[in-house]
Length: 366
Image 1 (cartoon, rainbow, N blue to C red):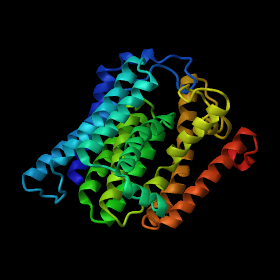
Image 2 (image 1 turned 90 degrees about the horizontal axis):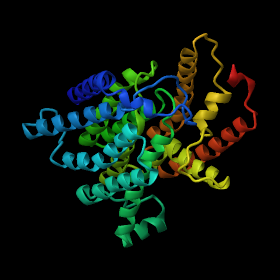
Image 3 (image 1 turned 180 degrees about the vertical axis):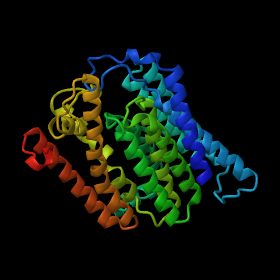
Image 4 (image 1 turned 60 degrees about the vertical axis):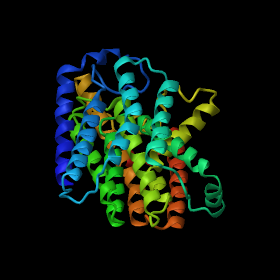
């Protein structure tokens, strides 16, 4: 597992360097007037290429290693190829959007849905239980319903990660934390194969972060967010499906921040009569940037934006840990996990309204 992690990190870090050297010309396509733009200059959005190289390269090496004696006892068999095939439509669609800036939300959603369909068809991924009696009975009586939920989860989570990908190190660090939390529970239940895939994904993400945080030389773009979303969705569904001890609410609490950010954003835009696909600058992390993070005084505008950008992400890392910590502690306790999800939703809405209404305590702005 250590060897896979080192390989994933190096492939991603070197891939990031090659992107910066040879594939940065597309950055000028990203307009200065975009509402979610909080940086100066032209920065490549092809970090997803580096992450994809690290993820697929390490997975392929692990599968080959398993076929020749499996020295790490990771049990990464031919099924790993199914993960790669399921990942590719979403990843390549996101990368295509990063290069062209012309792929509509509808087509990108179709490609992530295709990843979900491939996962169900090739890997047999489905949702068999949600920890709620009558729902579980319905899932047992209608297996197609569990498959539909799995496709929805795999199609939606990549866009949730894309939604929170606004500042240096934000989505990447959230993905890294979630991967390690899932890997920890996978090890607790003896699922070393799942843990290996997740740890190598975390390592590939760390290789990308070398260029992304704090210098902001490379962005993950849609490609990177879609890779994290698909891999984490596949891992979450598979971990619960393969291990009856793991509560289905464990991954829900683990991912409640990006998931609820997406749900709340759809509601917020619908209430204003705006299409959910229209970008704006009213997401939670953007309000943190504007109204909580202290202003930075520096003569150079680019440097000022970078410093303020970098100070925003740690606030959201801490926010994420408020859900990751109880999720890891109570990964097999469904009632506690459900209560924690409810508490997060209430806390998020309260915090959002407080920031919007300028009622944030003074000590938070110091």
